[in-house]
Image 1 (cartoon, helix red, strand yellow):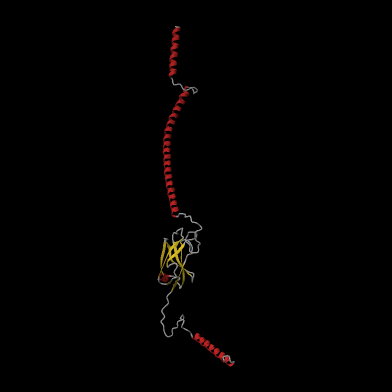
Image 2: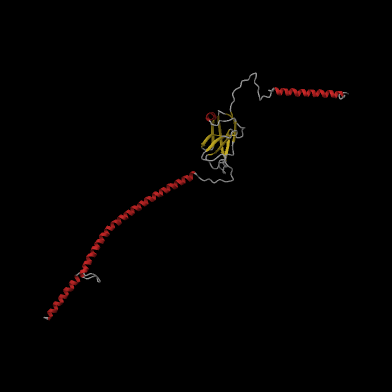
Length: 283
């Protein structure tokens, strides 16, 4: 009987041990079994919620990553655009630099000027009739820096006026201009006078009186010419007297000559009579 009881106890212990081993016990240090189940359910729920949240979070993260990628792409797009603009600006700057190339000029060089071709530089001053076409032609000399454009004017010495012949004229190796003085005179507020004129060629944007730097166009080399207005025809008549002719004498001049000859005659006769009275001429 006692052996049967021991065998039953041992069997019962084995069954309980098997059930205990098969039962999902929580880790050590957790709450009792009833609380463990509750906690396990919460943890599983939290885990599931966490997984769901993680899943939901992963999508926004991926979306955010895509957005970031899009933003990065936008940034990359903006950066090339900025680079392109910068390149365009840089290209523009290079173009400006190439169009306005800095030329190193020796400061010891003289300023540039003009040398007349028509009329010739060594010819006598020319005189032009107001109303005719006047042509000027010249070469540029000692010019290291070519101006973008020039103005051509004629300065009158009598009334201190400046008459524009050509403005904003392009610059080449040889400059030439034809001045229609008749057309100019017909519409001029300040008419041309019979006087001496100075042809001046100077750079656009500068003044005639500016001092030119070395190699730049200056206004020191100037050409002087004369202009005149034709006078109306005066017919020769009996009463006409030429004021500038050497043979024409006025009444006052003729009376003066008569008086002079009379005094000379009286002086000679008086000296002869006096000398003869004293026997100067006697032998």
